[in-house]
Length: 131
Image 1 (cartoon, one colour):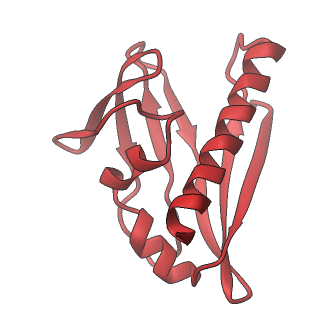
Image 2 (tube, rainbow, N blue to C red):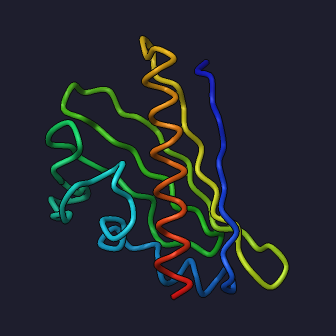
Image 3 (cartoon, one colour):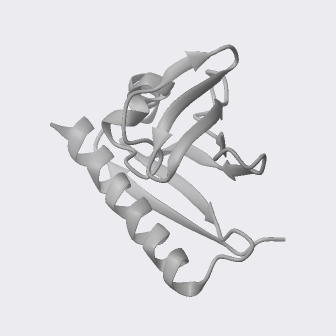
């Protein structure tokens, strides 16, 4: 089992409307700098992109009524990193939650940097969709 931390941001939008706005893989590059540095290109059932550390392949969960936006990232070494993500109802608004798993061999400094990156990206998503 891997240590995990879940982070969230409250967004002033109806949760279902927000999910419909952001669930598509093509929307991720607008806010998820920790995932991709450039646009995504579809390659069969997966998407490919230039990530912060090189080329990556990403598998996204299909559109659903539950607000699930999980994705799996393969950075080229064959190991898939599971990134659970949800959009849930929070009163009249929404909560976007992302779980970050500490990967084997990841030191404290790298994990702390990933935590900052996730929180920065969630704040970017909030700013983008609340404009």
